[in-house]
Image (cartoon, rainbow, N blue to C red; front, side, top):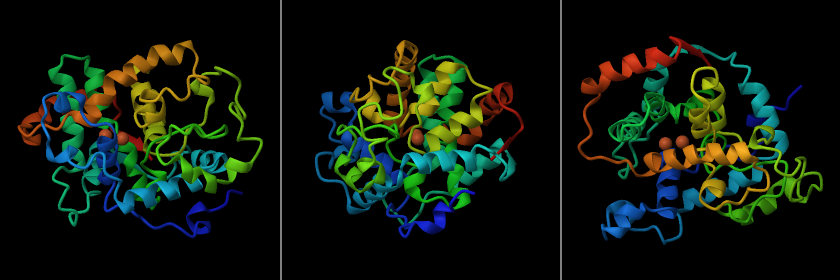
Length: 296
Ligand SMILES: [Fe+2]
Ligand SMILES: [Fe+2]
């Protein structure tokens, strides 16, 4: 019998004004090199060296404290059963759109806009259509919020659990409060894993990346699945902190993760075509690869 993590945590609060606040913070940490090179001091980058807002810091405090090996295994058991709800793909998009909190004046893009900007930038660069689809669906795992999950179990940088937490992970000092930090089963370099065992054998912290990977794993080419599963694993794609767990195949596949990542972070386009205009293309694309409904 699994513990009910939503009730045993005393801290189920939602420190972020909305889920986008985490992404804004990632962008401040890794600003667009192209924009900096052009000396475009855009609004997005104005504070990137300043300390993150309190909500973001509090968010990481909770994330790093509660994402334990046991927590991840329990969440997988709960959510990868996919027995909660069945809905058409487009209903999931509608739901994602409702996630943004209008009280935040900084948020001018809703989730659907972010997905379309990502996918359209990929399409405009002439990449394969399955990668365009990955752009469109990469954040669909955020529907976890439908089930009342706390923000720190839906978004945030992801990292392996079951072995030592890298000090390259943002706010790594908060791992001191994670029970695995002092558990000798989990706190050595390799922990429960073997050297270069491959990421397929590694449990990542739980969130929207892992969830959407499992939703899509029968429908999308492997390169795309890596993009989905590791798109928030900044400790690896930016800091190379977990080479010791990766195998040759992971390294090959991470070239695709690296290709995808800038589209996720830097594809804001003020001249984005409207959904009405884009709809026919995306409807046929979704129909080409995905079933009509998904189980959640
Ligand atoms: Fe994401
Ligand atoms: Fe995203």
